[in-house]
Length: 309
Figure 1: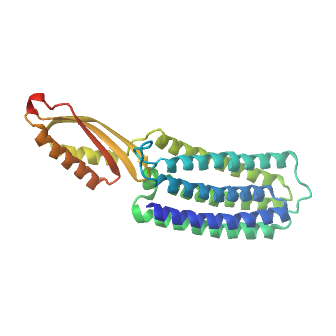
Figure 2: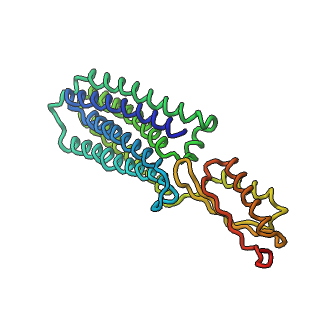
């Protein structure tokens, strides 16, 4: 998914989450439901997170300069990491707090009989969230037509990952909230509503951990997937007549659509610099054609003899 499609998915998610947050807060006000309040806070945080993801995409497109010769691609990773922290601290933390508080001090006067408020809002929220999730997955499938789960794991577009994971967690949270308010209504016991809030908090905490762990690897310099590494090796194998051996292939993601690669090559001793230079240029061209994400390629040779200059 390119940045334009990612932005479109994020804009839709922001609009959906903002509308849903208002609906949930209204329902929470009329029913006193802890689960609904937690869900409202969750949607409000998701709205803010969408803005941070857009900021990350915008800053990641800044041109390389003296201070950042490899560009600003990792800005997208940084802001996605901030989103994961917000989901944990504000989403998961507040939901757990609200659930625990309502277990310790149940709101006896809460009007849980107004279940139609909660059910109506939750069903409406499911429609909004479902539409947003469907659109994000549809955009993602355009560039990843097969193997959705494996493609999602291999994708280094953290903005898209955040939207799909957040929207999926939101759908699960809505189901939990619906069960909580329904059981509370039928049993007249507010503890089930509080338990639902705690479960939502645990869900968001896990989602935040999953996102943070995936993004952390990219921030500290994660290598490309084995499939892309094999493509580099296959290209180098085609130059068996010109080189004795190659090795120590090092790769690193510089952004969602950028990566660098370095490889040490020992060319045949009889080759001169004049002969090696066009070979190196051809190898770089072949790699970029096969895997366009490799915007920076460095080939180091220690086999050039001084008497061949």
